[in-house]
Amino acid sequence: MSTDCSIRRMLTIILGCVRMTTDEERLLDRIAALLKEAGYDPYAQFCGYLETGSDLYITRKGDARGKIGYVSMDAVKEYKEKIAH
Image 1 (cartoon, rainbow, N blue to C red):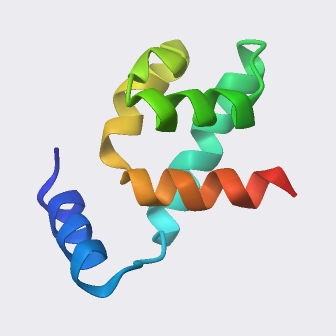
Image 2 (cartoon, helix red, strand yellow; image 1 turned 90 degrees about the horizontal axis):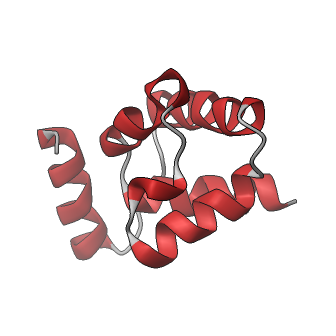
């Protein structure tokens, strides 16, 4: 896990909410596109990932599974809500 992610997690605990960064949003956009290319519904896969913490809900295609580790869970939650509407 990156240091930035650990710092974000601590800030989330202290402040209650830290919004996702532009880099995280771009990365999540790419992961969502890879999930669609692989035939999955990104919203459903992000829900499964958040509920279980298991990266098995994220495709290996395009190294999406490796990339999800660079994104905070809070950013994934925020992104999931964004794509739900």
